[in-house]
Length: 310
Image (cartoon, rainbow, N blue to C red):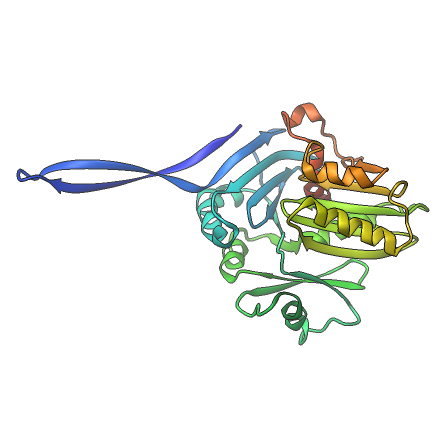
């Protein structure tokens, strides 16, 4: 279920007066590790199937779907380098996997760029989109800017990718779409049947949180980096307080890469009396036994995204 990609580099040196040749084999660890991979169904013919590729600063997550949008494959690839050097890890992974990726009928790239902004359509314009990012994150004029429009036509997600990363991925598959995780998450939330009761939604990843509040209409969306559990708890409690909602009873639904034994979960649990994990969509036929020890809520955002892209 796991495997470490390795490369070997051979070099020869002359040693001593008789010039005997000593061969040194240096095993160089590749820049990524496939630490989880489960094939749920037959993968022999991929030409009519869909591959969802989530690209973060630290990892790549893969979801294979059949024509009925049922999961075929779940895979997690971890980068061995720091986020600022992850382009090297990504290029190594692309070099190894490009032929296999092109076997799939469609590819959907979902980016987790931290340089992202949700902009109301009334304020968005092609001329000022970069300025929105610049105001929030500083000088970001050295990469590639991408824009998603939301199905309601009322919002745009504007985000930046390193130019080399986007160029490598854009050429990887001839039939591909590209979108930001914030966009697909909002699409998934909008698909849900609205309730009379307020609900606060959390999508949690490594040092990243997406938060949305529904209270007789959508009131709040935000993506935020966090360093400690206190950062997340403070944000959640502040949003609830702003809407006058009691943390003891307001429903808070979460999904993503948070374990119920983690410090983050335990900190949220101290303050929130109705904290529940999001179930997989009703249309998905997948059980915990098939996941071989992984938790379903880890993959819920990725599966939700796979049902939104076309």
